[in-house]
Amino acid sequence: MDGLDGSGKDTHAERIRTLLESEGTRVILVSHPSKRFFGRMSKRFLRGTGSVARFFATLFFTADILWSVRWLKGVEGETVIFVRYLMGTAYLPRHLAPFGYRFFRKYLPFPDLALFIDIEPKVAMRRIAARGLAHEMFETLDKLEAMRKVAQQLASSEWVTVDNSEDGKGPFREVERLLRERSMLRPAV
Figure 1: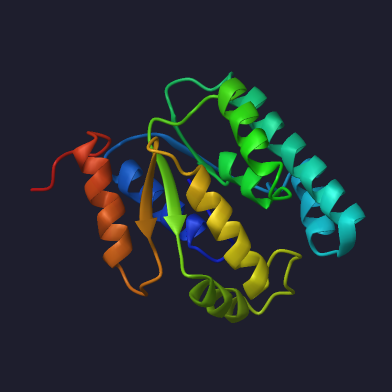
Figure 2: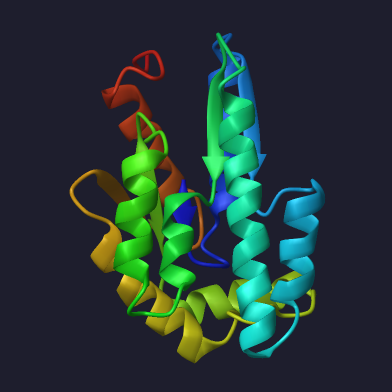
């Protein structure tokens, strides 16, 4: 599951985990940047500014993802939900994003259901502000608008896009419908 900052990725992932677990599925949820060393370092640099901070945020974020993928090889019999994965490449400089996406898409496992949680940048900014936390380097309206354009271009036909700009449960009902349609959840009664 991927999307811009403030799009509701973690909220959707938690709801999906709850649904799957209610049907007896064992679920592991991994959100990036994680709480492991590489994730913590990425978060630290995301709070910075400038090209050096951006470089190290990207480097540690990539290491965090690769560590998760390596760890995933040892997991059997469980459903894994990754939050923020391939679309993190949309945060690369615009000219590098398509190359980065193609590279990682070629070499990393691709999910059975790739969800792109889309959001209007103004709505994302409102949700980010409501968190009450310090903003990260990409959490400005201009940057979210630019990242959204890149991410929408990268979200090929392999991705299912859900618009989460609307507050409320409507977008999640769409996600639940998709999970049932793809037999990841039992049909609704």
